[in-house]
Image (cartoon, rainbow, N blue to C red; front, side):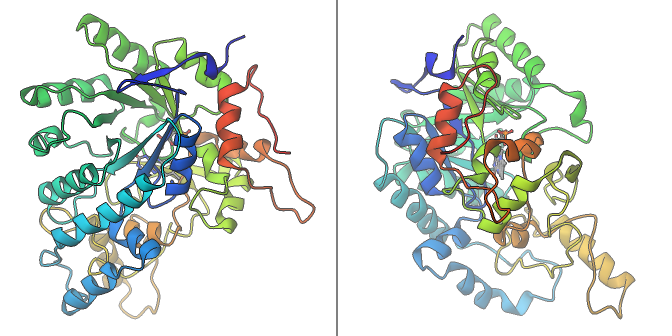
Length: 414
Ligand SMILES: Cc1cc2nc3c(=O)[nH]c(=O)nc-3n(C[C@H](O)[C@H](O)[C@H](O)COP(=O)(O)O)c2cc1C
């Protein structure tokens, strides 16, 4: 019976263990988690979502405080168009996070950065170019272009000296999205080095509409395999979303995938950035306590635990401090939802906003408990301790369980 270790991912001249730990913003897939994947010969992701905020937390910079100081005068104004990111600081923050991670890398694996393109940051093209170029400057092994895939991203960085040697990949959830990207990037004479195909059971934002449940990862993979064959394109495919055991992974590896991208099982590891008490919430999750909703201002459905504090929170918009979701005209659908509630309840001390959430504030505070569909099985991956809490796992334990397990088995920790 085969296991994941019988396969290898060939990428950029390397032969890797075909396990990719997916990017989890904001700093849920920490440098420590990504470094473990690389040390074990696989692929890890850090994320550049809310990079200034993350850098402040780790490196004692003051980017967020300074931004708020500069734009404090605008806090009560719902037009946020003046609230711009300083591009120099954005580059500095990215270089710090990426550079310091890469300095610590050991082993044969790769570290990539997940770049959520839907973070439009009140100047989509300019900020995206800075994020991508700064990550390349800081020595990242490669970039995975995620949520909200900007079809012109390759062209944005085509003059960067590392444009052809860094590994550049994309996340898609349909053949159509892939075809569009390839068509749009043809002018740069560069194809993606890998394609992550993310199905509807994944965590984070879903690349589908409200009808996500109609889709199935294996079917999308089969369509893309057929298309690439017909076009004579040899690009490694990495399948993602709901791959919970090594045996689930083997099924995809035997049917056209070169690797699998996994995330949910790593949310309960020591190296994961979620606070300890939140990891316990993930362990405790039941199937009916997980929902896909539309509270993200990005407009994409997002899967999360139904008891996430972010749902219904009536936070005052914090765009002067954060503002990562502001569109090109300085607007965010949360601001609109918030103002509507304030207007409807003029005398209320606290309001609740059900339709949208202030994703920046809530992700910053680890209050959006996003997870994959199978999060309710996490309790079966560990042991319950005497005090009723579940034992945290190590990233190495989970990685090796994916790598070597057979027969749908999940190894419990020592
Ligand atoms: C907590 C969490 C946060 C995530 N954040 C992101 C993100 O910021 N960007 C992204 O492209 N994918 C994100 N994802 C999706 C994962 O990278 C991955 O593709 C997917 O969850 C794999 O499915 P699985 O969780 O069932 O293993 C996130 C997933 C989880 C569980």
